[in-house]
Length: 155
Image 1 (cartoon, helix red, strand yellow):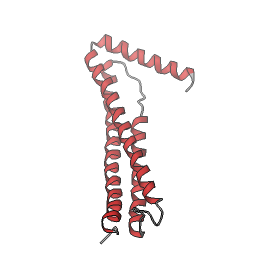
Image 2: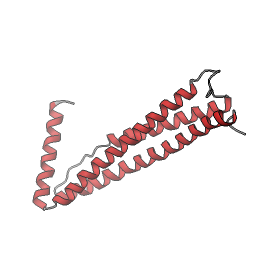
Image 3: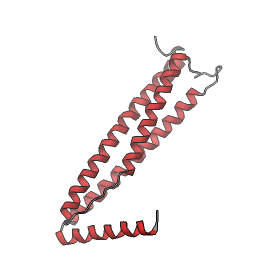
Image 4: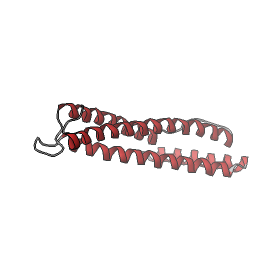
C-alpha cells in the first residue's frame, strides 16, 4: 500500500468523523465501528478453523497404507471432496474480511446506510463460509470415523 493510499483512507475517515460530529450520531457511529470489528473477528475465526480442518484432512488423505487412518477408495473420495469444500469455505472467509466500502456521501446518516449494505455483504459471505466449513468438517469426520470405526467408509 502506497503512502498516497493511506493518506486517502485517513482523509476519508476524518471526513466520516466530522460528519458524525455534525449530525450528532456518535452512538450509532460507535455501534457500526464495533460491528465492523465483530465481523472481522468472526471471519478470522472461520478462516482459522477452516485451515485447521484443511490440515487435518490433508493428513488423512496423505496417510500411508499401513496407517490406522489410511483411506480406502470410497473414503478417499469423500476426504478429497471435503478438502475442496473446506478450500471454498476458507475463500469465503477471506473474502468477507477483504470486502471494503467505496462511495461518496454527504451526511453521517448516508455513511451508515452505506455501512449497512457493506455489513450485509460481509454477513452473507460469512454465513456461506460457516456453512461450508460445517459441511466440509462433517464430510471429513464421516471419512475418518468410517475408516477408524468400521474399516470402510460407505456401507
